[in-house]
Each structure stands twice: as structure tokens, then as C-alpha cells.
Length: 420
Ligand code: MEV
Image (cartoon, rainbow, N blue to C red; front, side, top):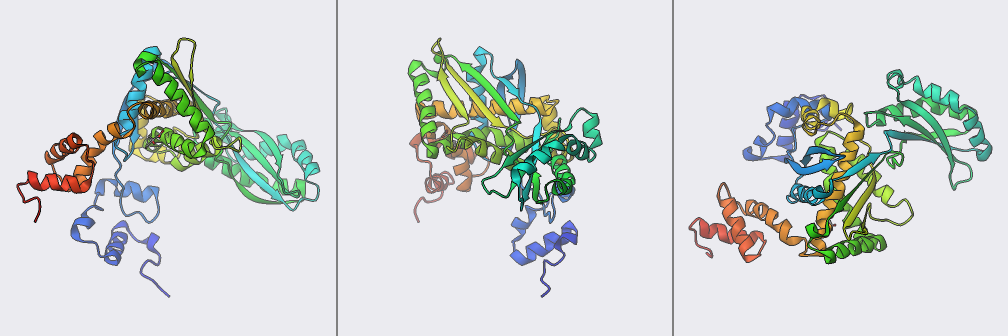
């Protein structure tokens, strides 16, 4: 049966919009939200079936010093308190030098799963016997990467619990690219040769997002006076211990870290889902879901925080190369390599976590969060222009952060009767 969305992807953007509008019977006001000529062409290039853009606010976190370099950090996020929290964490770390960060390198790996093996352990040895040949074969797929000093450089083989299968890891230095395309293409290239060598059947040929050879690390020291005293230091250390023991808390702890990480990944045109799955898989690597940061008290009584997280991002290729704002966001940060970008991202994750734990260890999270969220509540209630700030002030005064309360204030403000 032919339906109205047949060959949808072949239609022009205008025709696609018309088809969707008529299907969904949107009103004129709603339709106008999809008119953004400036970005139509870009979205059409980036995704299939494009009908426009989804605008997410872009802000900058400040106060960041990473490896002695001052950085302005572009963050694309819809959550009101995130950018303020990142900036606050950076301010706390600044007096003792900010963040010190380091990365392993841009080492991705793709996996080739081989099944139906009679002799998996012998097959493993046979694969490793052909290691150099397989690496050379893989590198034929991306001679430029090789010329630039990257490319495939190692092969490792893991036996799985199933006694008739193996998984081959092809390790690739992707330099300044995130590298999924290069690593996937290489895996597909060498899979048939691995089938010959093993007499098995190659199934999945794809990167692993548990990029545990691409770990970014950062640490910072915060004076106890900055936090409000020794008691707060102890409480933050305890908060981290709780997260180590309780995976339910660890999930929220890590969500807070990702509040810092995802917005930069998005603002630089990188793959947020790749970084997120990598982070959560890494958090579970010891069979127990754990916090990605550690907080300790040092001999000076100061708080010391550290983070270890896989950060698979690039500064070339993918949307980073096509999206003009992704490019300019990298320029704004004065980032020149994937390595520098990963160091900054890990530092922001740590700063974000610091602010969250400080709030949770003291006054609670809602006070600061709601201060920023009150304007959103005013907007939800229909406030416009200078009404937004006035309604937000009233909500904060009464500590009642509810849309119905905001609507009530708005009616009063507009001189309407509060109850009809
Ligand atoms: C909210 O978006 C993030 C926090 O819940 C993180 C945390 O609890 O550590 C505040």
C-alpha cells in the first residue's frame, strides 16, 4: 500500500515539511517554528528526512584553567543550572591551579566477532601469527591516517565464554578524529582474511564504545576554606563513598558528571551517545557500577578530586567538520587537538561533580537549581518580557516553584482577577 511518506527522503525539505504539517495538522504558529532558512541547508546535509533544527541554548562556562591554560568552555544544554555549576566548580579549583589533565591518546578499537570455531584457542594463536599482515591490510583503507602518524597499530584477541567464538580487537590511533568510521572500515576490510585464517565466520565488525584505551583523566585540589570548612570536605568525601557503595546513587552522581561532559561534546559536533555509553560502561567495568570521580582529603586538609573517563571525541571529521558552529566553538575554546579537547571535557565533568557534591553536602541542590529554574517556571506559566524576571522573583521569595503559583502571580501582575 502506498502511503503519504513513501520516498519521503527523496522529497525537498519544503515538500517534507508540507507533508508532515498536513499529517499532523499543526496550526500556523507551530508551523512557523520550523522555518529557519539559515539552518535548513545544514540540517539537510547532516541528517536524512530533515525538517529543521532543534534549538538548544549555548552558553559558556568560565573560570576554567586546564593545564595552566585559561579556557572559555562552550556548553549546549537545556538544563538551567549546568553552566553556572560548571563555572562555580572551576572557580573553587582555581586558587590552587585549576585542573591538571592528561589523556592516553586517541586509541580506538573495532571488534570482529568470530563464531563457529572448532579450535578457538588455536585460532587465536593463528590470528596473532598474522598480526603484522592484518595491520598492514587494515592500513590500506586509510593511507592518509597512516602517513600522518596514526592508523592501525595492534591486534589483540579475547576468548569469550561461548567455547566456539573469539573476538578480535583491531587497535587504531585515530589522531584528531573520533575515528569510528576509520576503525569500522578497517574492521570490515580485515574480517574476510580473519575468516580464512580461522575457518570461522565473522559477524559484527564495529567499534567498541567502551573506549578504554582513550581514557581522559583530570584532578584538582580545593582549599577547605573555599568550601566552607573541614566539615564540608569530609561530607563531600563521604558523598563519594556512598556513591561507591550504592549504584543507585552512583547513577545520579555520574549523571551530574555527564551534565558537564555532554554539553561540550554536543557544542563541538561530537557524538554524545558514544561518550555517554563509554562513560557508563567504564563505570561498570569492575562488575559494579561505580562513580567516575573520586574525592579524597589530603594532608593539608584540602579536598582533592579526580576523574577517569573514556572520551572519544575529535576535532576533525564528522559533524565537527560540517557544522560551522561546532568549528567556531573549538576556536572559541582555542582547542587545537582531540587530546586537548578530551582534557578539557574531563576537567569540566570533574568541576560539575564538585559543585553538585558541595551543594548536596551543604544546603541541598534545590536552592541553587530553583534560583535558575524559576525563570523557566515563569515562562511555562506564559510570562513574557520583563514579566519573567518579576514572576521568578516572586517564586523565589515564597520558595514555591510551581507553574500554578506562577500563573496566579501572572494574573495578579496583569491586573486580572486571581480567581474567577
Ligand atoms: C542534576 O541534574 C544532577 C545532580 O543530581 C547530580 C548529583 O546528584 O550528584 C545534582
